[in-house]
Image (cartoon, rainbow, N blue to C red; front, top):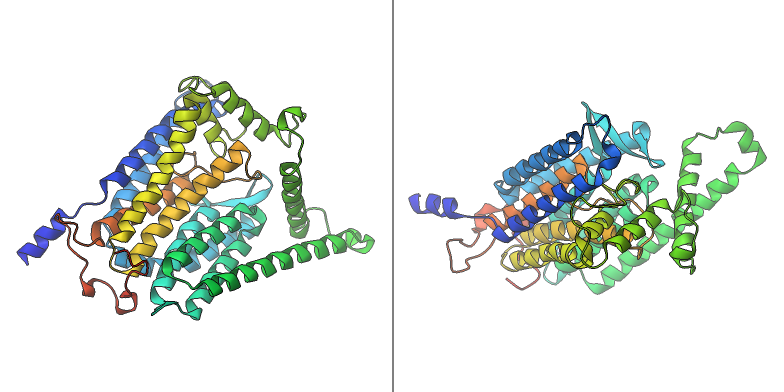
Length: 426
């Protein structure tokens, strides 16, 4: 008993992930302070950055506490979070606050919650649990695959009015986790076809609603502020953004309008930063770029720190998360922790890549915060929880590496999560 207690005391979470978190904190504080000029009112220069630092500190506490929780409890947490996340998203659809043309948040006890951020973490926990329980000798059983497709479909449907990037993110996360989980190629092909059919059905439904709404009879009955009108307007926004994205005309030849103001100001910020940057806090475009402190903070980072350090350097930091998660998953003996650590890493890195791709113009415009850097409470809390899950796995699930960390015992996990790591790298 004394030896076992000593071994538990010696367990340490991965120091490299902690190092990455600290780097992201430093970048976040410097660049949010550089980008918040639009929020400064009445001479209170430091209030916005102090609030942001407090959010980061609360995120640090979430990460630290979560890292101390044995990863086996995340199975129970998945079952609790699925209905809670669904209820939250439904409440946002019905009574949420409208931001940038869509209902995205809802206030609970004075705290503004963004449903899409909660849904991302929930779907990773749920898919890790389902895929771990559905392991068979050479892959994943059909029941597990159908559960994954159902999860993606339900959460994508509830976030439909907020944009397409959340759906693409869910599809990307599910595809990566199914590959890691050992789903056979023909099942993956079938899932892809299901997603295509669902996408075509959504497009057809949208066209049908538009046709009905445009008829004279319906124009007399339905007001312009109905939910269906808002959905049509939102889908028209997506079409407009896609049309602009595939327009071959160079951006510098297009006139700056309210519709493309963000893209143009972001491009100006990155061009102003050049290779080496203008220095932290010296951004010229932060006062003119909408959402400079959230969705478009990557442009301010490049302006301040330059293409090499701010652009490529930050990209490598996020990719290091995926690389480190891969090493941790490689040392797991069971499927559940391997899927947990890789699922959280894929979620964080894919969201970062989406944000960067949107800012630099290689992906259509949409809203995604830069993980652990962009200003926003729910995003910081959920990403901090994701990092905490990864640290928990690194603390409790890795096998003996010739140091003080011992192989996870068979009885530490429930019977339905005893499946071996399907990557065969352990």
